[in-house]
Length: 425
Ligand code: IMP
Picture 1: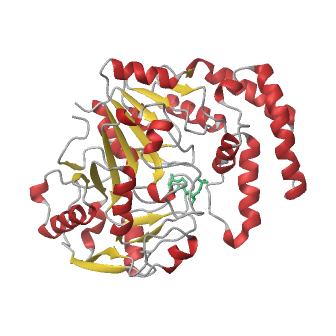
Picture 2 (picture 1 turned 180 degrees about the vertical axis):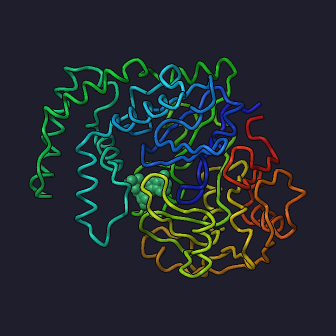
Picture 3 (picture 1 turned 90 degrees about the vertical axis):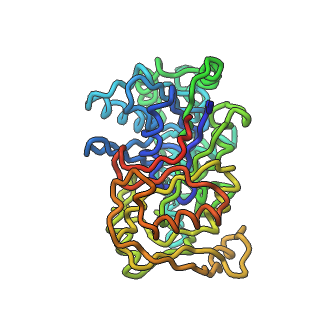
């Protein structure tokens, strides 16, 4: 029996993880976020009602399931409290089953200011971050000067830590960026109020997760962003500031590597990317526009239009390798329903898998073409009903990457899936 299952993106995020996590949560006792922050946007559509979650695990929409925000997540309290209040306003019980790690670093107002000032300064070289302070907060963690959730709960400790760290960041804000320094009092008073709101939800998440494991419970580990945005394995420097690959599920929650029983890698049947940076299979033609239109490709967090292209199997194979993917879930297959020809990138020519920014830019994709099926697969739940052309593509993905396809998503709703192997059982 599988005890802990990791669900993560194999591309640049937005693969449809939220929907799959929500679906699998039916058989989970707890859902855990372990990296990233409110840069994520997980869209769930249940009975035609849309909910977008940024920080709270997607399991929250299933009654009785416990939700944990692990030590690897960077937490912006204003965003967290807003999300809690919004969910509660629509009748979801949050505070009695959401738990926050005291070891998680806080995203403070100066992180957001710095993120935005840096992006502006970079001009055309900007990374296209979500502007939410993710990078600067992770930098403070590595520099060992983070204010962590546990520090936020101790007024005296917070006062001392904030004074030191704000002095440091205000120096940069004022003298390097020539911007207005931030007010200590404003940040401190606000932080105290936020601490009071979240206090009862803050616990030793790692300890509690191990209690779940001891009791034979099932954990669902919910990744954010995607493998190509990983700080080590992605398209550096156009990446996010956390490890988005599966090892993070252990370090960002306190599970051991041997506690992870299954890794579900989510890939769209094509590729999208928000923000700047290399995208070898990007399309600038009618096919790209058709993917964007049919896939409704706008960022869930920033509303930015997503760049679209064909599925990149070279990158997917690498993601299967670095994540140790057990099974793949192919999402948005129905978006390809209208295409006469569908292409899959099968080679980067004579370019080895890129390790430098210039190598990414030099990639020249070679494609294999497949006939489209030009009929509706929307909402299909039975593999045998899929058109043979669609099955041929699924088979090819499996052969090329070496990972079996265990799930196929055929529409945005919770029930629109072909489940071949249940990762939770
Ligand atoms: P940051 O995570 O805000 O620092 O942004 C760094 C890069 O990651 C940018 O290209 C963002 O667009 C991208 N990014 C961050 N979070 C997500 C996400 O959840 N989905 C897709 N892209 C993301």
